Image (cartoon, rainbow, N blue to C red; front, side, top):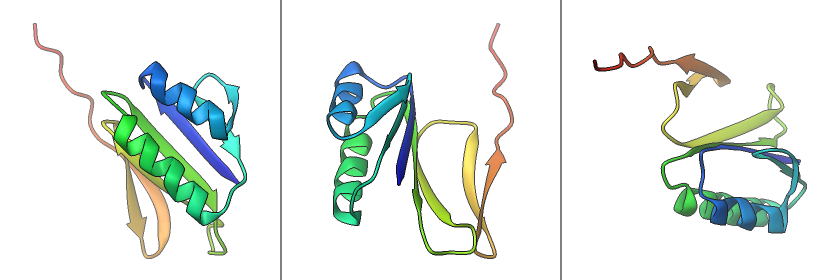
Length: 97
């Protein structure tokens, strides 16, 4: 299973994702494809992300049971802790007056 979550992406990318995946909520896409198709979808997300951000998760036979990748600016940064996927939070940016 593949899950893609997008924020602030161009409508063209949303439409492209809807060709391959089912949009179950705004910006949340799911589907079940081979590694080759998953890589093609991720390539299209990376090339069409614009100023938005996205994360893709998929099932793997690891202890965690999944892997994920991110693209674009987001406070959540993926880290690896001895083979376990975790998410760290960057501090909030101070707004200029």
